[in-house]
View 1 (cartoon, one colour):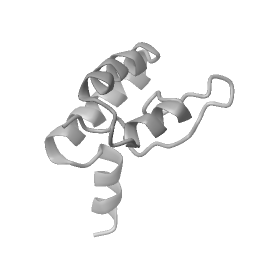
View 2 (cartoon, one colour):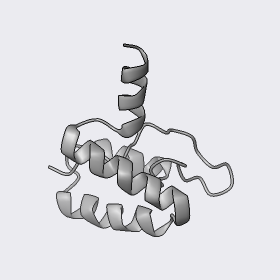
View 3 (spheres, helix red, strand yellow):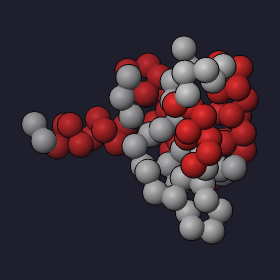
View 4 (cartoon, helix red, strand yellow):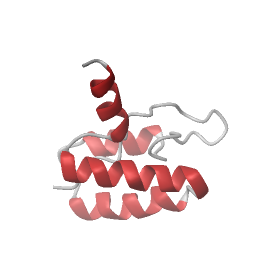
Amino acid sequence: MIVSPCISICKTDPVTGYCYGCGRNNEEKIIWKDAKTTDEWKKKNLVEIQSRMDGWQLDSFKESYNHKTKHGISLLKKKIINETK
C-alpha cells in the first residue's frame, strides 16, 4: 500500500491549482481516493508532485511524508494533537 501524500496542509494555489502541502491538483486527489488506482500510478504521481516543488516546500513535504509513512500521521497533525494535550 502506498500512503497518500496528503500532509494536512490543504490549501490550493489559485494560479497553479496545486495544493501547497502535497503538490497535487484536484483531479489527482480524486484518483488517489479511487480504490482502482494502482500502486504503480501512485508511485509515479509521488515523483511527479515532488518535481513541482523545490526549496523549503520540498524539504517540508519530504520530512512530513516520511514521518507519515513511518508513524501513520503527518507532522502537522502530530503537532495539533500534542498541543491539545
